[in-house]
Amino acid sequence: MNKNMIYIEGVAMTRFDKQPNTLAPELAQGAILNAVKDANLTLNDIEAIYCANVFGGMILGQLIVRDLQLQGIPIYNIENACASGATAVHLAKHALLAEQYKTILVVGIEQLTQLGGGTIPLQLNDHKTRIYSNSGLVLPSIYAMRATRYLYERDEDPSLLAQVAVKNRFNGSLNPYAQQRTPTTIEEVLSSRMIAEPLTLMQCCPSQVDGAAALILSTEHNNGRKPVKLLASIVQSGKQEKYTDDILDAEITARAARLAYEQAGIGPNDIDVIELHDAFTIAELIYYEAIGIAKPGEGPELLRSGKTGLSGKIPVNPSGGLLAKGHPLGATGVAQMVELTWQLEGRAMERQVNKPKIALAQCTGGGIAGVDHAASSVHILGI
Amino acid sequence: MDITPHYWNQSSPPKPLGSMHIKSKEIFFPPFAKESPLDKDYVDQELNPNGILYSFTVIHPSIKSGIQPYAIGFVNLPDFPVRIFGRLIQSGNPAIGDEYLMKPDAEFGHIFEKISQ
Image 1 (cartoon, rainbow over the protein chains, first blue to last red):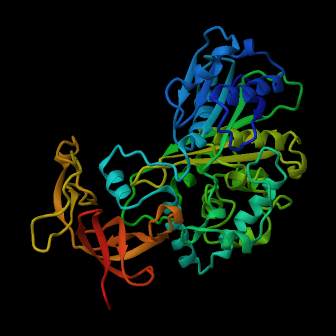
Image 2: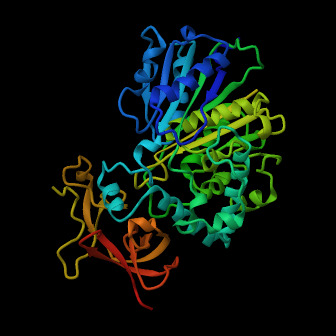
Image 3: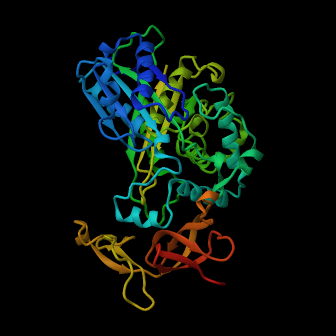
């Protein structure tokens, strides 16, 4: 056993859906217990818990596991906006590599129905965000302005964006864990209610969703299946934006991906399947180029070629992505890795892609003015 | 209490203010608060309020909100180069490359008004 190797020993998640009458413990405990079972372990084998969440309030992790009869093991609560779950995995990796623990449970949970609907609020803790928020800055508007510029520079029309939604909604229709399970058409996407031009409702991830996902990371492999290894784990933060910045550049994600490829010793051509942060349709197109699966300017052609479809050369968001599966913030990064583990192990049922060996998860966390994104995380898994 | 830094000078008409980094000469908006420990590295810089629209969107609030659609965008002010976000005021639809004038506004702090060609 390679002591520097980290294995994903067990994974589980709840269906992402509106569950307004379910409280956090009931929601997350199902994912936790199923992940432990999937790892062929017991709760007593868990040495620490990393709990990712954004809006659930303080000490949520302790609340969730209080009734599980654990014996006071360390519980860490982690918030990094939409990248909270991925950041929790990243921090757990550090602790495992430092030999603080051998086996850690990472759980991500969010209950967005508790917020009552609408766009995710910005945190008004600095002058720039306050001023911009007062003028109407919200997360959808940032992506919408990217989309406007993208269509302008690439001489494309909004049907290109709609193709992303059609692809991911089809994948979601095959995923029993997805919130949106109805396939759609370009015409339906474009005729759905306008939210922030050029983005219509079906080009935005649902804002009313609850869910939890959990995985077991360990330096020991004992689950009886072929080992899924964590080959790279990167978290980066956004740099202060400049006048000359290109809003289509996704610099933070390109940087995170480059570091992840270096850490794993591979390149974008080695990736077989991807889960990426398609909170809005434009995001998927921009991230094609940021993570290097398309050359600059060639994102539209990659989408149109069908290569990122479920049966394509490099399927992107086989789970349905955030657009169809849903985006309960704290759970998303963990759920991406749950899906990719199932894909690598050949357990993804109807949405299984063709024998992947290497998988990439990309997740961003936004919400402040003046940076591309606050956080971006890239993980690479291999079997 | 409004703790937002004032970013309009007293000239007539008022001009927007940013902060210029003393060493790099880079411009930042809004100006740093005087309480900021970073303020000593910056000086106030009056900005030319004329700019070019870099990108935009039109927000369509839900019908039940009663709020009419409104345009917002990023405008590049090229003289002392800085990109500023704000409400866009024009008749018809905005277009990338349109020229706008940044003006004070009681509700939003500032707006960008399209310059007629």
